[in-house]
Image (cartoon, rainbow, N blue to C red; front, top):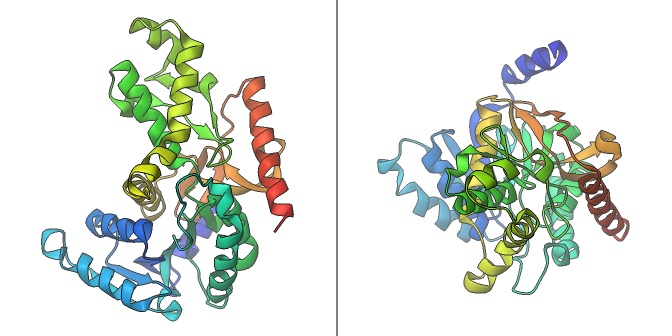
Length: 327
């Protein structure tokens, strides 16, 4: 912990980094929504947008900037890679969109090819900030970004299952007629079809979820758990079928991760990182509860998992590793 503190002070005093500057690479639905959300957050004083189509980035920057009189002063502009070298956080949303009927893993080869163009340009910079990966499949691309960027693994973070966990809290709150902020639970593993709800550690303000369910008159736990987990897992497919993309929820998730980093909150979020032995898993990126602060990943938090959840986590890791071998 002492080493982490001294390292943090060194980074915070690094004149190569502007702690109030953020960059977004990719100005599609997710990138634009993220930029708009960050403008309103007042976390940053400078926001630079990059896109393969410069006019798209320039148009989004100008459109968002016109809302500044209702939010606060901020420098917002379209830029180039040289403009992001001193950013505290670089958010990568670039990639092909997930189409109706397509899984996140179906995107892998298209988006890995895009990352193979982006990451060397970041690696060429003296970048001292945090690299936040949002494009799907986020776990695979977090792994690829960690390999290609050359950055320390603790400074390469994927948005992971932060959004999935928010969806879970929303569904549980609605099911139990309780404020979803009082629901404490995590979805772990892949941000995708093999994701796992950590039911064994789920609680509502300290009350085990099954006990709280019975307080509310629900006793058919297995059926309810299965239905809720299915709705969470399939919610993105449902939204994509209806409106071609999801972007508001993930934009809010990205803002939350940025808050943890910039404010050095050391909050626990289920972000995707390259595991090196935690839970017996290594050399693959997936989501586990993690303390996130100014230096990125501080440590993983060993939440309680039952045997079935552990087996599913191992299966999720295996699924991702097999896909990595094909790259």
